[in-house]
Image 1: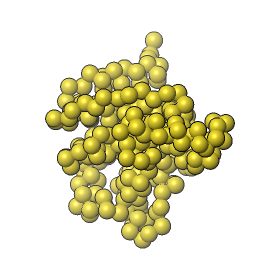
Image 2 (image 1 turned 135 degrees about the vertical axis):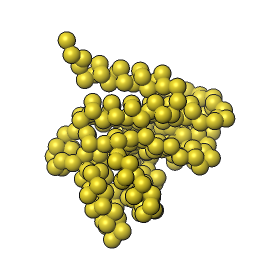
Image 3 (image 1 turned 60 degrees about the vertical axis):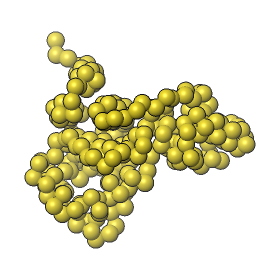
Length: 241
């Protein structure tokens, strides 16, 4: 009897957990692309010392072309996700500049796809990563795909990132203090873009009480401010959005 999609996904994630070197992640990204039936799946990691690592299914010629053109400076996915903490559909990014539109046309011509969904991830000590799936289809089809698979994609993004961090040389593990259920609720709602007033209203508490939860979470996470606290909670898997 053929394995179900969920069984295949669980088997791939188990393989990811057992990966012994970064190079193993390339084959895993290809297997995940096939499970989700998308054109491409890519993970890109920048370590705390600036070292970069990528794995994924883009054509190597496109990757080299991207580097040669220095598209990192104008790519709305990279620029937009660096300013965000939560996953984003590419349509919600700013493609209004001439440089961005030219990049988009070039990317589509090179098989990247006209649709995309990216999960930005922050790690300890300044590490930043992006987990992306892209495809060529109409808006309605893509909306159904992201709605059905959003939770799995976010979890897989964090699995990928945790494995990449395992391979980062000389990384000292950081002790994690657990957040209370209310602190988790507050951080999660802030991470998905709620204002403090909206968070307080959703949780049926006063803004003063909310401040207490936020400050407690910030202290536990060793964060400089609320934004930093949200980033740390996401990167450590204490909240998932």
